[in-house]
Image 1 (cartoon, rainbow, N blue to C red):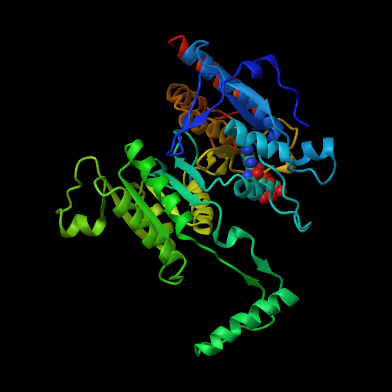
Image 2: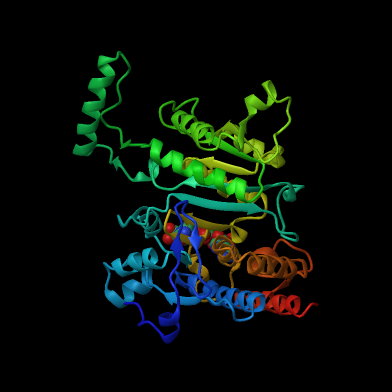
Length: 427
Ligand code: NAP
């Protein structure tokens, strides 16, 4: 299923993890990759040489990524049969080597097949979906000042309505669940639910909410960000989303008492002065947050939110700065992290060497930062920005820009590599 270990892979070293869930990365780590379906092979072919060039130019051979291919999706299915879209070995190797990057994977609609992406996140307990959303100079955007938005969204990745606990309308299971619920409702004098309804469950636990918030606060402190905002619908769903907010505040109070202040403390006790080294903990109702990000984006920095809110909010915020084509993503757990392009497989463009590889390239940037290889990450960001400001872009950006030079996916990757080479040679 997976190619035999090459000489390179045998000489590579293993990533260790500290107790706070941070990787300790050797100079020659094995990093697993999944090409993905549809446009996956095109964007991976453009992205991988960019990562290698940045690492080579930054560390001059002292550091190197040893790439290790894993199979999933259609490629796995072709080799191992229709029921092998997510081989056990792929899960084992992601867990064993610790850090991986992937292209998009198809979820066939209506086949009853559960999303591979959701399965990966749940099976590997990648509880934090991290989506940094910022503007890249030169990218066409629908708002007047896209550069004012610079947020990192921490979306809880394992529960909420994504836990996949639901029953079809009219099914026996739905009726059994509804009979049980309706008895409770009747006992408390509340209106009952129609027995013809479909039913879905929204689990939200203290453990999962707290570990997400812990990561968001740690991230804000380590990266010098100013605030963490809990985004929830606690006004309506008091025992799920309301509890998420309360647990979030408790993490700040109990685990980071010296490094956090709430907005209330700030106005009532501190005269609006944030103590040095502290971040502010805020909370906002989810619907209000959508307009806040458009109207007052600079007031938000790190966001911690349950699964469904985070899903909506991250796509809306990405659109504000120019769309999903430029949006990186990461799924992070305590001993494992999987970085991925946030768009899908765009099947109509598969194999055409046409689409924008930036989402995958920028996911690789996040991966390098997570590894502590900051200089290589920054080199890629400036090379991508330069390509876009030079007007060398793929079709999606070209159709919104005047005087742009539309290039293929591979040529866009090559333009980024050229900018990396030039920066490395000081011009
Ligand atoms: P999609 O693949 O993201 O494509 C929708 C549209 O977005 C494309 O037609 C294209 O727009 C644009 N687009 C996507 N990627 C682009 C790129 N790299 N560069 C430029 N434009 C890009 O969404 P979908 O068609 O709804 O989903 C297709 C499949 O992907 C489904 O099976 C879905 O389940 C799967 N999916 C996987 C993931 C994942 O693996 N993380 C995420 C989402 C969806 P234009 O047509 O306007 O050019």
